[in-house]
Length: 388
Image 1 (cartoon, rainbow, N blue to C red):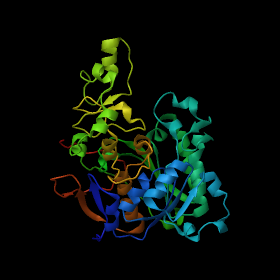
Image 2: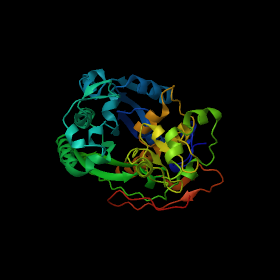
Image 3: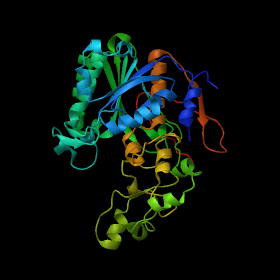
Image 4: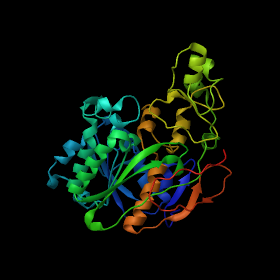
């Protein structure tokens, strides 16, 4: 069955569900796509993702397996920009949206980030040494080459905070030099149908001749960890892989949900350690997932969260094929599909005049279809607190 218009989703879903979504005629070309979190969001919004650029061969293999893109370039964006226009498919120069999540981990809020700016680092995605704080500007070069109507970029929230704001000014200046009018928001995925408090910087630049502006605000009810994963039953293999470790027996019982092991470590050992080992609060959306799932503990069972639970908390589909890659890495590196679906729906509505069904398809068992009214205002919004 094909729907008349895209509908927002919450709860479990499958890639096969994409077949029921009527295409809206909007085309997308994606860069730094990793395993395709953003791609799934665009597809859930009714867009056609015609291809992408990805430098990591493992990520590209997974992407091709799950999405079979029409135009697929395994290379860095710098090399892609240097391809002669005549050697590229013509439809890339008529694409509606250019998407990208250029790696900018040097701007994350962890550690003494300022000392890393301008340095060159080995980053798994590149399998090579790169200046990560240059990749956003390389991404804008792709926009200048292809001239899409809209450019959407997702990044770490640290890019909008503190001294990093100077880089944002440079990003805005390069967008304008390329003929685009940029805006930026700090968005919380927990206000966008994702059971995870994941704050991300989102940039949207509209080509100057389009004469459209975008305003974003999301305030969907927060979905708790326990609700998102309630139907998942651990297998024996999962207990063996994700069961309790030595430090769980020491610190899990006395750690308050939603906090780290640091307090118990200091109380019992006299050392302020294990601050990145987090015990989730089952009544709230999860803390931000990273690529190392072994750091995150279940709220009611003494153990680590499983890869299947992490996929739910990231709104990855149940039938995604990881091709043997550690799911935690791929999930932690990706944009939550439901987060990008909400962004894409609003861009399609506000820039291209394509509406969407205001209902929400609720994938949770024994739950009704819900409706929400999202005000479109400046600012990122926060989730409304909801019961577990």
